[in-house]
Image (tube, rainbow, N blue to C red; front, side):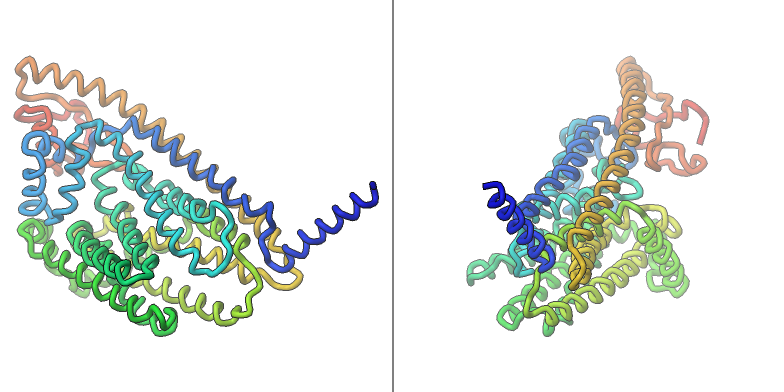
Length: 494
């Protein structure tokens, strides 16, 4: 009996070894994505809990009183006729600003869950295209990894995740663009294709009126898709994919034209002296700025987590295939295309923002998010392709799997540490903000018309009396928020 058990263990062990050497996922390894999902999901839960410390700052001072006093119509009027023409942006701001400070605090958890769900749907639709048997939880693991790295790997997580004004303009739009792809991938019937085309057109128009940068990224990505469709898309779906891209491009162009011709966009270009978009000096300095941005992103350690997650994903999906050469050629084509899209779209986004922000494009990290989501997705894909390239006779996928898992866990630990530090800073500011808010409300109720205000900056957020006192608009918005005539600098510091 003992020999039989030993022989059985040997046979099963040999099967495991054979499966690893052949690149086939081992049955026990099929639960690996489910186990790893816990780490990025825990980060998201902790970050959502930290959002209770969010308090108004920057543009929030202006949005809150407008919504309080005039509602949705006043917000749309402010954006379309005065600020920048982003009508959809105005609607999204209204959805959280109508609840005051509570809306700002709930925005981060709600948007985090929404981003996770939309990316989960995107990954669940895209991963079956690998034509491999997927381990349990693969789509959720991929989506959770992309979500965690995209939101918390940013150089300024506060502006990327916690600040609603930046999130609705630069964090959510690229996620919406990815979600619009899902109906097209899922479409298998005439009705499904018609629905996908409707989604492409309406989403494109909405994005055009929401974010200029995401519009540029989407246009570049769709144009590249059309160019490589003859080699990368199966003949049976090629015609539909090209039609879908054309409809999406038309929607984006219509939305962008509505935004560009709006009185608000015209006023912004005039006030920021942003008419010289294609000026040679502006183009050159935009190139220098984007080179700085690209180098910063390439050398930022949090993005290594996306590559490590892709490496884990690739180790669990890799297997021997008779179409190996064909797939390798397609993978090389897709990698080259992704690199081109990232470079072209990133530079184009820098070009259209440079006339407004000038050298600030190199420090305003929220402006990068419109193409950084594509960068994170590319890193995951590159990690998976690397795992496939590692699979050669004599090499054990278990080695790459262990390495990827270790790096992934270390990066997530680093992100957790960063979130803990940010939580401490947010809590300190929230307590000081609440004390000052109570004092200012009490003084305003007592009839005071001019109130002293102490600056409470956090993570490079705009506060009144900044830039040597040259920024006057935050002070005016704070005064309107407390319904007084003016505020003064309580500390005298600038």
